[in-house]
Image (cartoon, rainbow, N blue to C red; front, side, top):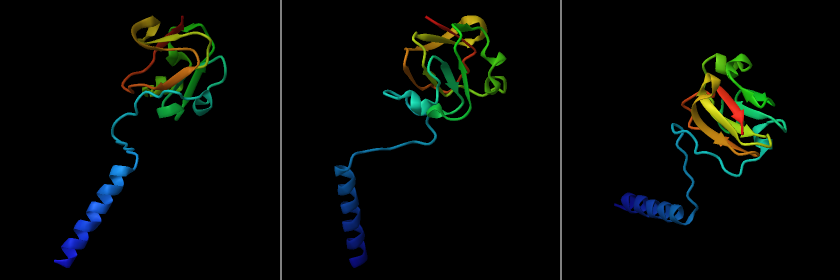
Length: 132
């Protein structure tokens, strides 16, 4: 009986501690939510470039461009050629960048304002993009 009481008290104390502590949970199987307030330093993107990454939050392989538009990112990006998805982006240009799931600016999937970036859904490749 003493053992059950001790366990119950310990459980209540643990629950109380959780109730007063800030909640922070992460699900390793779910993709991270789009980032807000991120900095270019966290994304290793050279100023003036549009960067895409094979990992979350600017991790993994990086491909970057200064061009106004690119009709086929696979021409210059090895991880796209190898079939990997784009998990995050950073727009270090002075313009909004629109990006597409298909080459030649077809199947627009999103855009990112100048000086911003973050995590994407992670279920597609960016096959073309253009600055607005």
